[in-house]
Image 1 (cartoon, one colour):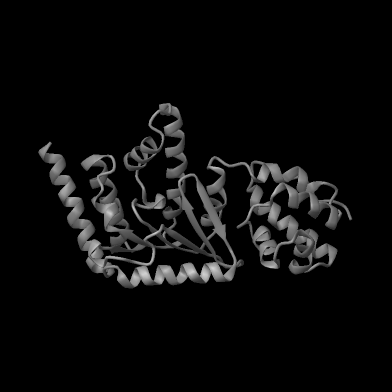
Image 2: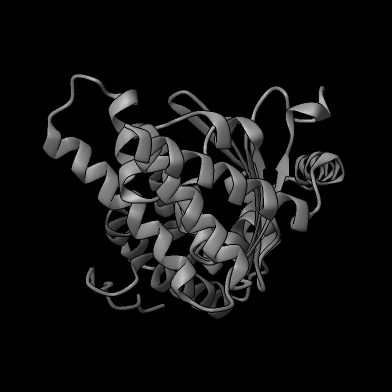
Length: 280
């Protein structure tokens, strides 16, 4: 069969590659399960590549070209679609988050990246990389702030975060940065753009003492969960893992303050930081 045209790198390569994969598979008369079988992946994994929520790995691209007779199209364009300004272990999660209609997240010690402000993000990156050039720190901060533009849309994605009280109390970047970021979170809550709850210290032991969790939901692909640690990250799609992380998140919400009480605490802590800054 004739192969599709090469992708335009200036467009949305991942989405275009997924659309071409769906088209080529349909032309070959294969189901997602049938294409996934020789790749040793599930049909849902093929569906996620078609939806653009999972990247096509080079080894899969080569096999797909052979199976579908696409004359090296996916091998050639796989490299373009996989280019990213984010660390390799985080790239898939960032790209999935941009396609999700709902995101639920708990981060144990920080304000999540989607809610960060420039001063706060700069302090975080500098703490991670104390000897890096300023230009390298600026590049990381710019990439993180680009992610926050997802919230420029007034309704999508729906974002529900559980903030640990430690993230409110730890003075990342100092009083000015903390007053600014908590004021930003407060404003997002007050204009009903996000749902936020605070997991207080008084909750004691909880279901995510060993790390954070992020859940992402899509209209045309199964849900994903993402877990990470220093320099590592894992995007999971198997139903058992996702269900386990959904339970973890539900338990966190059950132990957190109500949205109203959470907003009151965020407002109070922000005011404390603003007062501290005035006293300096």
